[in-house]
Image (cartoon, rainbow, N blue to C red; front, top):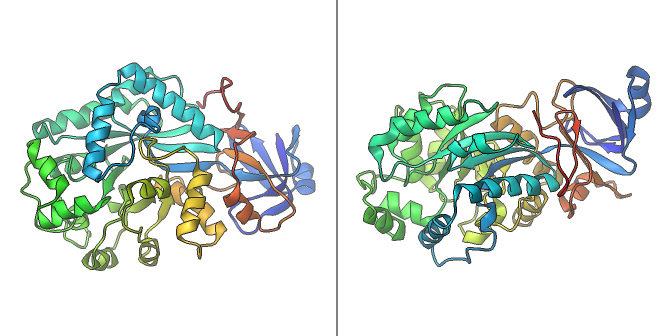
Length: 416
């Protein structure tokens, strides 16, 4: 087919006015002015009218397990109190509840234009029970061994066995305070092609725990039997980068495998360490979840200057209002008003595609790339990227893997 729109936002230079995209199967085969595309290609024309055609959005960090916890956990006095609260809520849920929650999350993310999602699931064994995912999904098995560190090999092997049928999967040792050094190492040993993600330096209490061997999180983890021998010796970042297997400069670790969520709490020595590192991990920031917790200001400018690739994600609805990446862009813009709308839009297209090692298939409208596309209305204003960031509604047109999608509560065509 040929898809025509008022503007085609390729992410390769300026948007193309009166543009078009030719699709064959699940791939984009041609992009340009409508008249030129129609001359060079055959196929039915889908005219989207006065809309902007965009690459499908990529949510780089999400927990669809907890979609059902929207508005269930009021703001807590501390991050540790929130951990207690979410554990209490999770204990009330059955496997069927989690499956329903994941499906509800998929439907909501889709309504807001997400076509690809990096989803952390605490229950990888349930994934086989789900219908085919309606979005392009990277399933990350979230792993915790704080109560049973002797089960590291069993945990990782079981997660890989549960998810290996999926087209895209990875491993997610939860955080330094819940996952052992051995678990991180075992995940890295799973293979160079296995993507890894973790939560790091998220809260002030995590910093207190590792740097100072004190604070509410330290006391809570100690009370449940965690070995606290790694506390009081450095910052969370220093612990993550320095162990296992590596010098502090990170010269022998495959840090490019890692997608790291949060990194809100960094010291001056942490920034100096990042500057020395030859390879960098990818960072995901969740602006509205960040506001919910009232974390320290996200050090975006310093991370950018140091050459780290920063994307946006929604986190879970246990700490957010919706799975809406447009709302995340607006929240980020409020905190970083000097960042251009175009660069902000890259944080939910180009940047997460790179983090997922899909820079040659996702995040742009380019020949050879996957045919994952969405459309939003656009007006007379020529600040098109400003309009994109300001868009506050649901999507009414979407293509995933070259297939037209129904939006909302209608049945979808699953992405195979």
